[in-house]
Length: 152
Image (spheres, rainbow, N blue to C red):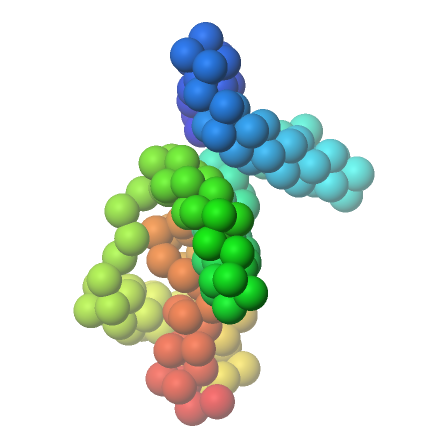
């Protein structure tokens, strides 16, 4: 399980006094715990599955990329460098990202599998892709491509 891997990596980072990795892993674990609590309060179980953890990680990377652009625009390269270090650490836990060609194939296969015909079927197809490919692609890009494909 991913959460166990985070805890082990955190222990190793603490032993080796790798403070950027320690702080980043603590942020990740806090985000996971927050989502666990949210899931528990909604009656969906005590812990979230790895697919949800991969979503959290992808979102964290995306947020940091947006922050880097802001920091660079403001001339704060020191803060941008910190964000890049965090991205590198978080990315170690993400699966290899799919190429644009692979994503197009996945969209087509998912449309066929779900029997989607138009934009009203977007949710069905996205759920299928999310369940099978979470963390392997940017779901926002997938959604945009899927909207074009389904005529929305």
